[in-house]
Image 1 (cartoon, helix red, strand yellow):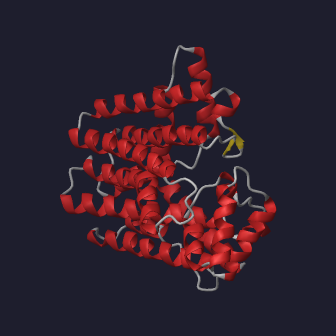
Image 2 (spheres, one colour):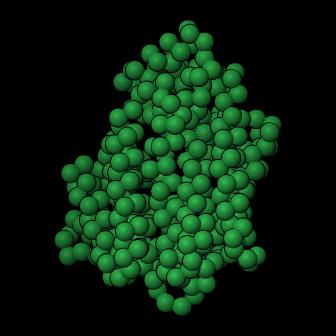
Image 3 (cartoon, rainbow, N blue to C red):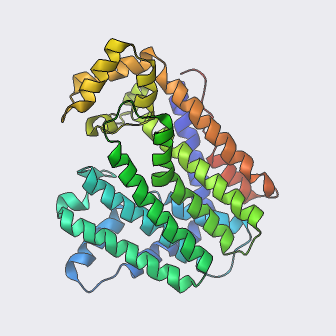
Length: 337
């Protein structure tokens, strides 16, 4: 239990350090998003207002702002505009996720598709992305436009790849990494790299921040997927099992399948073939995950990407901004799992 507390504390501390360091610019980013999404179409305005009110951590926007600061960008508003772009890409992705997965709750509130309908939510997702592209064009940098537009395309391909392998408990770990790299890590990588692009830094700095963002994104997704099967979190009132009940195949299930005997594998396959899974089946999976020490193995894999992300920052001189980004990677996973 102490490990979970330690991990949660480190994540929270590093997140708030990052937020505090870019607070002024983050406020401007929120204002930019709100003004850009304004519409004289009543339903569009209602839905975008609700979207803004549901908030979110704005982590990707903060990464853009922090990366730009690390590279020496202090004056001007390009960092704010592009941080808003990154957040709108993320928001569009979430809207489509909720529709595909028939999600009804997001960040503790009802999803857009639950309140209104799938048709309206799809169109709002397209509206968010179109406003994002307007800001990209306004920035006027071809490298930025190419990066963020290609990132959006890769995210969509990742969504399709996940659908293609939906329910495959024997999915290769390599396939899983391709999915989360496209769906999650690509936007993290773009968020950090774009901060370097607007500073006209050299390729070394751009590549370093892109590599940092990609590996940070992989870490975040693996950690998120793992937390969903971590029974210790029940002690802190966190709901777990969302991925299981949705039938989503993530790293804990992939690693578990590799270790099961023939009888257990057959049972796991049968469970994930069902349209609806129940709590008893989830408890059974949790028991198997504990039996084969899967949580520890997942954290070991996450630690690999943590190290890669942290080491990529060595090209930058020592400073507060570097320390903050480095701390964000320090999910020091205890070996007590």
